[in-house]
Image (tube, rainbow, N blue to C red; front, side):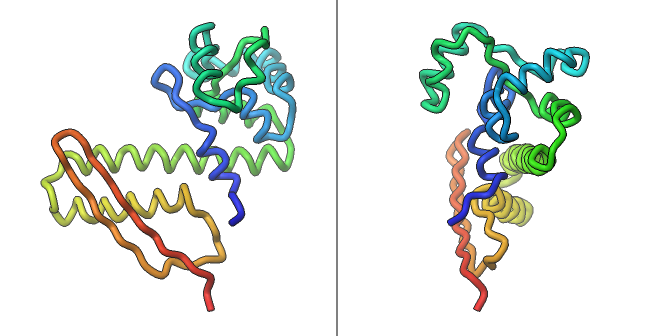
Amino acid sequence: MQVTLQEVVQKKIIEIRNNKVLIDSDVAELYGIETREVNQAVKNNTEKFPDGYLIELDANEKKELIKNFDRFKNLKHSTAPIKGFTERGLYMLATILKSPKAVETTIAIIDTFAKVKELGRIIHQMQTLPENSPKQRTLMEHTGDLMADLIIQEDDMEVTGTETSYEMNFAIFKIKRTVKKSKPK
């Protein structure tokens, strides 16, 4: 199964200081450039990255990042500050980096962040509705569709069946969504 760019982006999003971000080295990998090029673009355009667009990790955050994600182990001895780009920072970076790969990557980033935010809104809304209400079931199906879009993205396959079950226990909400896909005959 071929992994889409949107799936790759989704797997790289992490949370720092309650913000969903992409780390500068991941951004560079996605755009097909060196991390120093990303950081140079930021350095040359500081006015485009106000507070809330970029998070510079402190020493403890860097240590936690390296401890929790194997892909960052090569940053352990780096003296360069690690930056986390918020959604807005990524949009601004896209105005600076120009190439066909940059356009494709930016579209995947925008689509992924939009789906993640929509998923969060729907889950929050479902928790406020009466259990087993028609509206809650409709939102549950929409949640499953969004999750399938984020996780399974093969355009040449069609949905052949779905199954949704959910459980609510006090403040814990559990979703199970099965999407069966197969190639059209």
